[in-house]
Picture (cartoon, rainbow, N blue to C red):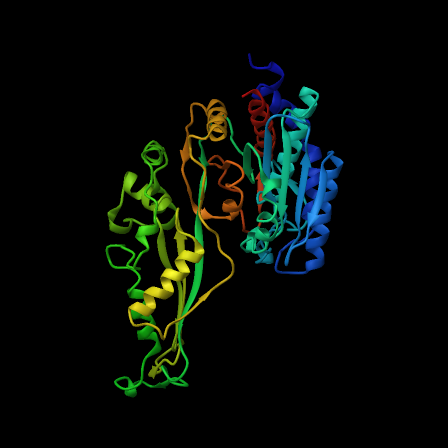
Length: 462
């Protein structure tokens, strides 16, 4: 029988008593402009603040230096049969444009039912909610029902470039029976999505430039019949990657794509959100590519790889005319990856394709570290536990199970060691994540505390 002390309504009541504590902890963190590409001293100070907060809650904590921001690892091993892992990050997006903020970005501000400051929703606020949620269930039961681990990195907003330096040699520290990726948010009566994977991402710059293949400098367009045009050359190379029917033409590419399982397709088919409406409302797109609809559209978004030209630069783009044959052209291209494609495989295939198609003069440079795809089966017991609990709370609103996110992240470093859940609530679309006046509604923060506490208790009971 469910312990009435840890029913969701009681957990919410207790979480609201801890609202001030959560805001005080966020206030300690938000004062650090912890943008990973800026002052490294500020990053170190923020990491130390995270370490101090975890120690105050009884965790054994250690900082792992990397070539960039340190990773903070914390653990409380109470000898329980099950272990719950939280992935968080203490770095944040820049505050630009500062003039668009109505409140100071590096200071806690509470207005009405929301609290403001950079990181309120991504990810300093959720980190605080998860930490206090574990304290909440410990207080109500007299002890933690599960062992708890926190991995808090400082470069998520710039691609987690150095996280592998911690994660790969320390896989034993990441072992758990379930992992929460940033937050578990469910609000009574509001729909939510639980994603159990994330697409990978490989990002490249392709360029046509340099003698003797191309001119030393832009030439008169009257010589267009004699001097190679870098823009045309790069356009033709890009056109060789994909045809008008959206088929990726790189040899061997499709051979490495693992076909979606019937289980995944059935889960997508049962989701309630209309992607057609989302794209029409948010982007004004009246028709999707190839007129995809329903399951066909969901499959393309969530379960299929894609390649995108993200930017193109060449020649003259100022006012009026300038008749030239461009000497150089550059394009930014990204690949969204699904199992079993990886960054390394895609780079090798791309280079081989260009060589085979006669584009050996096109230079390829991989930009930054990307992500490999990651996936936890939706039938995993931890995933099912989270889904059942969320469904009970959200009812009658739906909670959809989605096999993979359309976005990317460092999930691939966690899934070899723990089944993972990413959760998104549709109930609050005004958080301004990554934008000026970033905020989180106080009820969602308290509900998040209560929900992770409930998940921990139910993990222990299974």
